[in-house]
Image 1 (cartoon, rainbow, N blue to C red):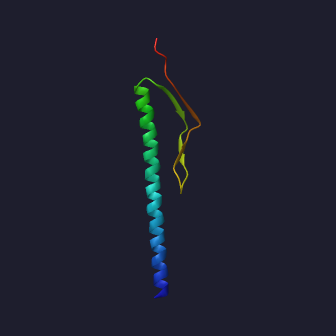
Image 2: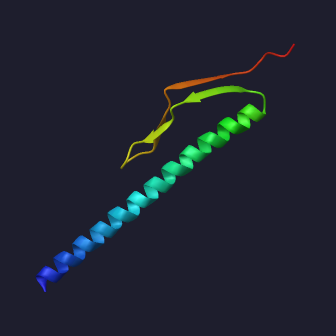
Length: 78
């Protein structure tokens, strides 16, 4: 009975780790999609937005978006 419980506990831990990893990957994709939408929306409003090499990282304990270059500006009204 003891060995069965250990195997069952290992399976539960493995499933929990897999579920968390799947959630994190989904959240990272949603963060990336949100950044893309923000850039698209601001460009549509007349902003000049430059964003290069955006990477989402931080697994397993955080979500962090890092870009190698970010610049935003707007033409002054005449």
